[in-house]
Image (tube, rainbow, N blue to C red; front, side, top):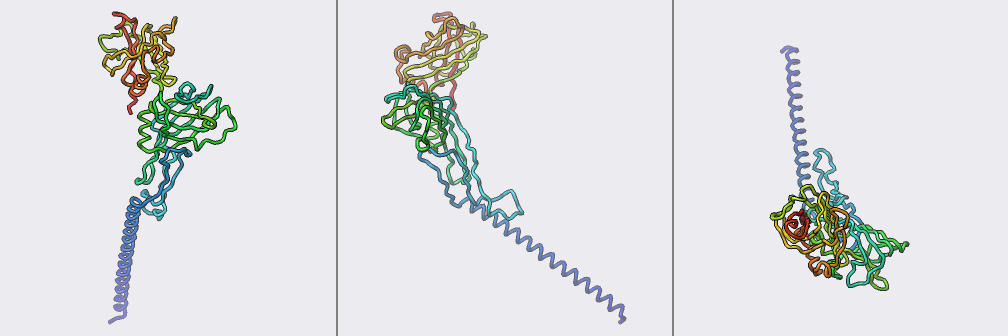
Length: 372
């Protein structure tokens, strides 16, 4: 054979050998890539499984003692699910949110000496408090969320050594402590004023009870060294700014003389339930009679309070004043306790006069249902 023939044959053999080698290397590379993908995928799924079933210890205080406001807690093991190519899945942290969710607030709570029952009061002392009910979801689904009551309070004309929330009606003094803020009270160099802010962890049941039944709980601030004395306030002592409107009136009553009127009515319970105060303002209507009735919306109920004597002479549509529960309103304190517990069952009515037909010319305001 000629030399040119042998050279051509060698050239063809070399090309075939190179093609085969490239094909084998490509297949091996694909295999390694696929295996790496399966390993990463299996590791990711395994880590997710571990994060769901591993036990992580989170310390929360179920006894209602004061703690500092909610802080960040971190838990390891949560998977980084938003990436596919990085290698940091093993070290991701689940960080609990710093900010708790506020569910309900009670504002402008006034602690007074005359609200104290069955205990010595602190003369001339005054406290203003705000409460927020908060919860904080945690990363670990196996650990219950935090349920907290947070208190901010300023007290004047006295120093305080004990501070707590107790369960009891407005006419009761109890030792049933629901949230104890006293351990967090610091030494105060100014005996004429006191300021405090802090949170307490509660059980879920206690937290819900406090939200749903604020009339059954009260704040107590005391000076228990050398004898017990305090000021206090129920979390719920009033119904403020209840709208008075004509469209709430139910036949046979009508709003002939109050068609253009609008106004607000407020009711305050004071001095352990022994006194009830009223504040009503109406525009475009000047009634002589003010009642609180017991009845649901769209129904006419019975009169339980007549506060007509609080009408301000010379000012149209204005009622303002306080009345003694037993002596002037003819009620028992237990009746006032019921009013605070079920305020949505009561409504205001303002009448032009106390006899027909003017009596039937009225406007009305139902105390709203808080929805808890």
